[in-house]
Length: 594
Ligand code: PEP
Ligand code: MG
Image 1: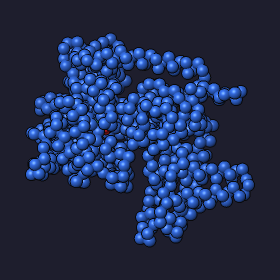
Image 2: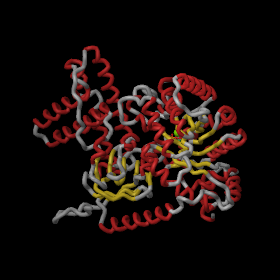
Image 3: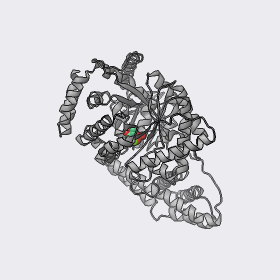
Image 4: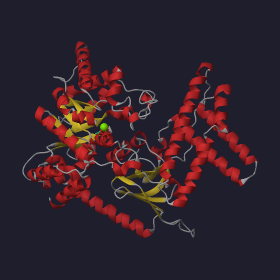
């Protein structure tokens, strides 16, 4: 590993930046700046009747670019004064280049008159503007030519929606640095090659963060000014626990972090020894610890961690990084692989939860398109019920996989009884269709459960319990919607608080409704995987937690140290409080003692 430049060059000075540590662990390695690469630009001719559509496609990419730049500008306000000012000027210049500019008019003219596709039109126009600036032989204008190129690359990225395919080919041990990484980009990261990542944008409970934790990659998001301070190949340390990113670390800093890496590895080895021990409290109450799966390749990890089932299979993975939709057959193969792999332990498959920060190219035009509030728009179960062939294919695939082992169907973003009833009708129709064709399916049909992740669903939990076979409480969205905090926005991350009394009351309400109706209730939001919350959740009556496979060991360790009676008493004391700071101290004091 390189910590100093070779042969007499002046060493670069160490700089420490801070963001949100969203996936624990330390990574040390050379930086790869993901936005630097040239994007392959497709080139084709637009038919005369396709010009309007192409202009609209360009307008959408332009709007997205302006939105991204404004977001970056908001973020740069967090930088120290002079850096904030400089970054502000630069981003303003980029915004101006996209507002009724020669670039925009030129691209529109090339699309309309020369019938060139939008990406290629942008590329030609940037080249022409860059050449004319260079011809003037002025250093200031030459620098503006470079800005035009950077702005053009942003437009082209938005048009091609290219996932960071380059991430698959980086050298072993690389640290990825980017402006923003989508969950689909992150899904492409191979933990054997990539050591960790950091980005300017992104919040603690968005899906990029969840994906990082699923892959076990140390990561820091929301790092203001990150890309202005680093060059490709610089040595970088990403401390996913504290949120620090160190650029060009001194030798002593590297040594300190290497020692930290060793301590973490030792702790992991100790935790791994718990694998075969049951998750049982000191007063002999059994707790079920299951795994959440983001990607099928985590199955091995789930088994290695001793998961007692898959409490949440996020099926979005099947729809990411591709242009077409997976049909029933393809989904069936994928789900059957999980069911067989779990060898008789239950597998809870959630229907498609696309929307909000989880986007998939083949559905990009349908999901939340044109919605001013995509998180509240056409997504998850709402989309499945509108696009019935999508839902039917998914239900068919789950029913068929259920012939090989126990499966459960889970519905995301349920807000009303009507939605559950419609899915039950759809399920009955798919069962009839498959039986008519003599296809082997789960017999009897699998339990149908709902996510409790919308405040209204939690408040109506007694009604929903009457028509659901089980509840899975999704605290990631429950916190987002209860407190009106975008879970993926680093600027409001400090307000995202699972210990807010409103959130805890909704959890309690849902648990009590499930217990009264005698249906199962689990919790599968990120809270489930954080040992800090274990005593409180068990104290509230939850006995089933589902989390990223890598979290099971630490939560099991916590469960085995707890006394459920004491946890229940402390939970009641906490539920009497209205002040979230007091709630946090009551919980932390309890954790420090027991
Ligand atoms: C949740 O919202 O808590 C949840 C588990 O679902 P997701 O994170 O996939 O939205
Ligand atoms: Mg959710």
